[in-house]
Structure formats: C-alpha cells, structure tokens
Image 1 (tube, rainbow, N blue to C red):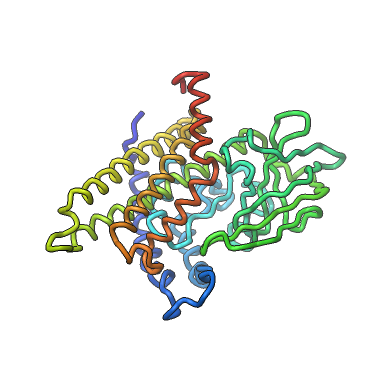
Image 2: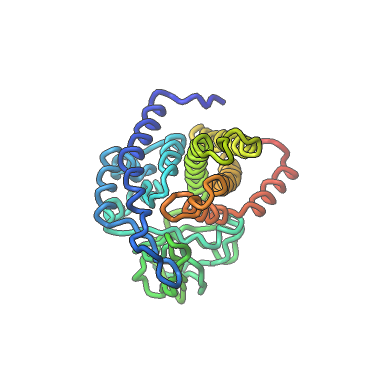
Length: 377
C-alpha cells in the first residue's frame, strides 16, 4: 500500500487547512468567550454557534466544496473519496467550534428530501443508539416486519443525540431473521415521538425516541446490512479523523506552551517529565494517523475496511482524550478555563469514545475475529 498523497489530495488538504485557519479559528475566541463576569449558580448555559455565523460558514463551506462530502455532484455534493474525507475532517477537528461538513450518506442521493437537507431547511440525525455499544449490527434489537403497503417497526425506545431533527436514519432487524434494514423516519410519522430532551454536555443534548405501532411506507426502506455497516464505518472514520485534528491542535499548543512557560527559572520544555509526555503523545498521534489512513485507503481500494475503521476510531478517540488531558495538565488553570479549547476537546473526545463502538467491545470483536480467521484481510 502507498499512503503518499496525490497532488489532488494535497490540494484538498491544503484548502481545508486554509478554510479552518481563515474561517473557523478566528471565530473560536468569540464562541468560547464567557459573557458573564461570574457564572450564575447551577449548570453552565449551553454553548451554541450563532445562527447568522453558521449561515455564513455553511455558504462558504459549500463554495469551497466542503459540504455533503459523500453525495455525488449530481445531487449537490462533493463526491469525495474516503481519503479526502479523512483529510478534511482532520483539519476541521483542529478547532472546537461546532461546525463540520454535513454528513448525508450517498444512498440518499435520489431522495426527494436531499435538497432541503443541503440547504439546511431540514436536519438529519442518525438514530443509531443500539449500535453505539459494540459498533456492529449484532447489537440491533429493534425489529421490523413487512405489512401491506410498507413496514411495521416493533415498539421500542432509544436515546438520540441532538434529537431536534426533522428526519432520522434508523436501523432495525427483520423479524425471524438477522437481516437488517435501514429506514428513514420523519418526525411527524404516526407512532414516532421524541421527547425528554436534556443537556448531554454544554454543547449537545440527548432525547428519548419512542416508536409505538409505527407504520412506514415502502420507500422509507433505504438499504440493508451493507449500507448500515458502511454508514457505521463512515462515522468511525469521521470520528478518527476529527480525533487526529484534536490531537494535532493539543500537541502543537502544548509544545508551544512548554517552550514559553518558565517555572522556577526554567522553561517547562526542559523538564524531562514534560518531554516524555509530549514524546508519548506524538508517537500515539502518528500511530493513529497511519491506522486511519490505512482504513481510508482500503475503502477507496474497495477492500474490506469495516474492521480497520473500527480499530482506527477506537485508537484515535482514546488518543484525542489523552491529548486533551495532556494539554490541560500542561496549561494548568488555563487548561480548564472555558475560554480555552482544551476542556471542550476533553468532553468531546470522551463522548466520541462511546459512539459507534466502545473500546472494550471493539477489542473483543476484533480479537474474536482474529482467533477465528487469523490475520487474513
């Protein structure tokens, strides 16, 4: 395999880097700034990106080709390869600003709702709660069966992150078989209700989706096992790539701070314990980078890549968490200040470690596969 970037990939990476440097990083300070002199008692207020700023960023991201990276150009997307998407998400991960390219799976290219999704008139959420534990289809418990004119989903209740959406992608297994189907649910569909929304972190919410006697038309079924697995792998690669960006930002900031911060007459960078922390982090970052690039390369070469994507996500999300922790330690009190990005990275990375496969479950899945099949790819 050859991970040397092509000229086109280098151009995409450089363009994404410049977009982040020009459009996102300058707005980070205003987003993180604490308005009140002293925080009021109780839970901290939710942080949200100003709607006018988001509208501007969406427009400029579209102009730069960083919107709907998986959709074909005929449907209004950018039709990026897996490697290109990794390079873009890695650059976007260098800022804590809650803005990233819109994720619409390619299988929705011909859906009548896709234009409204591209124009941000509708919002799409992946209701994959049952997948988050193991990151595989085996953990799906909701069932469906075919009825006259469509499908009937079994009564169930799941957690949905950022539930205030108009459309939901929802996986379920067919009754009596292990065949899985991917459905598109409208929030106004009879039998679908979303409520009990609470703050998950200061940047995200979680709600409860309940299905009761939910009947769906034939066209709501978008795909089967492979399509669901491909979406999971795409999400895992996105998490891995964003984690790389977090790691890069935290490492660079930590090195810079260690060189300039003087304590007891010496810069922090001259202390061996600090050198070891930064050396370990840089090695871990490089390891995770190669794992992520390998998974993306395999996807582009049409080789089996689902296990590689899961492993890259597992290693990279943990690395990002440890990178944020290192940055917090080195920056001292500034590290936990909400006007610095590190505490935001810390919370985000902790959440990413739990999405689309928890670390212990991924380890067990990969270990079982290795014992069964050996090192065959």
